[in-house]
Image (cartoon, rainbow, N blue to C red):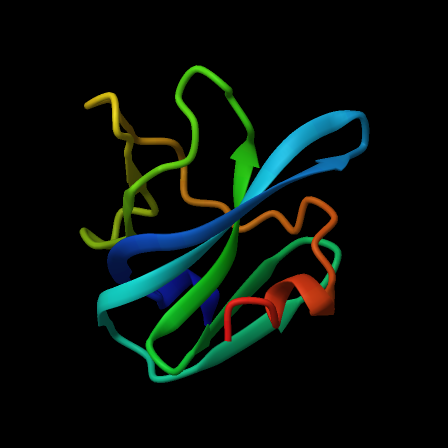
Length: 112
C-alpha cells in the first residue's frame, strides 16, 4: 500500500530527535494533494500516518546546513522518488523511503 501512495504539501511542523547515535527529523505535512484519505503504518521498517489531510512521516538524517524541508513531493511520478525543497533553494531527490528511524506511536500522533 505505501508504495502506491502519492502526495505533496507544505511542512507545517517538525521535530529533530536522536536515534542510534544520529540526529533525524520527523515532519508534519499539510497536504495539497494525496491519492488516499487515510493511512497508518508503523513497524520496524516503515512509519507513515495520513489523517485529516496531514501526513506525519520520518525525514532522514538531520543536516544542520540544509535544515528541515519546507515542501515535499512523494512519489508524484510513480517512480519511487521524493523531492525535498529547502529554504536555501536546494532541492534534494533521494530515494523514497519511510524508514521508521525510531519513531513511536506517540510521534506519529503528534501532528493530528
